[in-house]
Length: 279
Image 1 (spheres, one colour):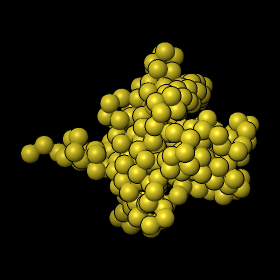
Image 2: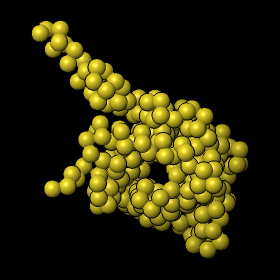
Image 3: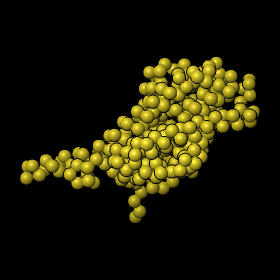
Image 4: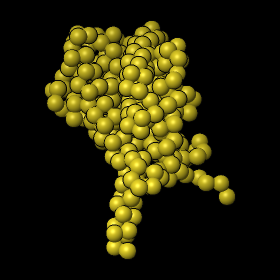
């Protein structure tokens, strides 16, 4: 019987291998796949707005859940159709800690992919405005503007903390999906964590590039500078802390860092050393 799931240590090694591949993409690949990821996440965000536009007055919890239920399609497209997402690529620090890639190569990927994600988000927002789906007197337009203004109004500290929690969950979704060996397994692995972060009200930098840009284009009462200073920057910083530091460092120390036998994690290595001492 074929193995249906990878162990955590196997996922760690697969993630390092993926980080090496990402670090060696050409600039053209990074920008094009980054644009695609911005569009894909925007698709999920647009579906979220469409679902919740009139449900908030009925029950806010149900509205959040139904919106969260459709949002994960964005990451499904990124991971299975193929695209480069800044927040998911934060896991490249695992390959950096294992000395398989350089800091400069990692930062090149992050910067170019981040720019691509923003371009894709803006392009989709422009196209959606031009489609006529967001008419000036429509409930969906009011909801889109309301979401954008609420995000810009968040205090720096709150946006930062919500972003840490968000990308902790997002990279765990990527980790979870890497463990799954078939497309159905990957869909479920992505859906539950991503649904959770949206339902919880956490902040995702790339999703916010779309949400806030769309709200601004529809008449949101804030400036482009406020969008970046009040939301995108603190959320990006929080996303990096959650996705590039907290999760990768823990898993590197547990599953990758050599301790006696190179294939043993710290805990197993410590136990093995204790056995030798007591023998």
